[in-house]
Image: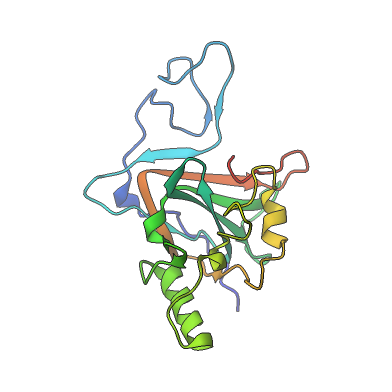
Length: 208
């Protein structure tokens, strides 16, 4: 029976409370916030928390689904992780439906090592290594299984919509499935989490 539970995206003890007027809360940026630009009305689409330096802010799969990982432009040490929920995921009567969850500011070292998947750094990498060993007899899974390196530019171009990337040919690789609650990486200096809804007017680009 499919697991329909919904999990929190990180460990609560690793994040700090957002401070008044720090400009990190989801939604309309207040005129008193430090990041407010008087020339434009602005919104935060990502919920951002500072990290307790004594804790490890893990990223957890909110639900079962498939993972797509893309590099952050201009920063090879960070990744964005996109989780597309399985069709049977149950989020109640939310409308519009959820297209994907975005985990930003993920440490690259928690998922990849050079051109390979990192070795046993979390549930995701452990399961990838285990699956690859069962199929091939070695522990050298290519990072393409995460969605990295599908193109000569090492990632999809910015204009490439993420919904297309999830369904595109992957040169013999299938994007890896995860279960709800799996650890799928480690956040870096901040915990950045975003929910993308399935609307006809918005198509998520990989660097958005």
